[in-house]
Amino acid sequence: MDNIIIIAKSRATGADLKTTRLGTRFGRMDLSSQLALLAVEPLAAHFDKWDRARIGICLAATAGSLSTDLDYWNGRATPAGPSPTLFAYTLPSAAIGEIAIRHRLTGPGLCLVGSDELAICEATDLVRNGECDACLCVSCRVISAAAAALINLPPDALADAFLLRLAGHEHQRV
Image 1 (cartoon, rainbow, N blue to C red):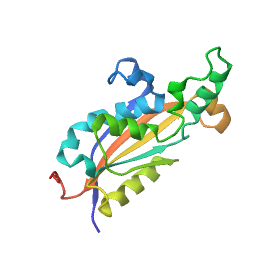
Image 2: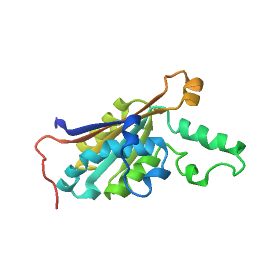
Image 3: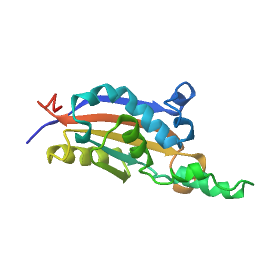
């Protein structure tokens, strides 16, 4: 059986947002997308080792997009109404799109609601089955105070990112 190895990993927290901005779109993004991008950024140097069409993205969102959904829903009570900019982030997969756009990754993308173990298993399968040469595995745990009250989980703002590949397949670029 082919061994999968983690060649790089990174973490971003809510505290990291105070000092970091990534491009003009960054400020309009929801917290999950911002944290996912920050977690992925240190891994970007590895992307040139492969054809970017052969790099997949698997994202696990612990609470889906619930925190953003609640922000959007609560926007109905404001005079201007809910933010049309925020609407695009009411899908848990929005962070995958932001990562793919920023780093020009066009391989397979998969979003799961649940634990990071789910994303790691799916990323491993994508690489082992030859659907991609490397896979970016991102775990977002963004739970606002309002969401925490609904789902009985503690508030959190954290993203982890791992880059996986088959052992012995260091350079696949064509």
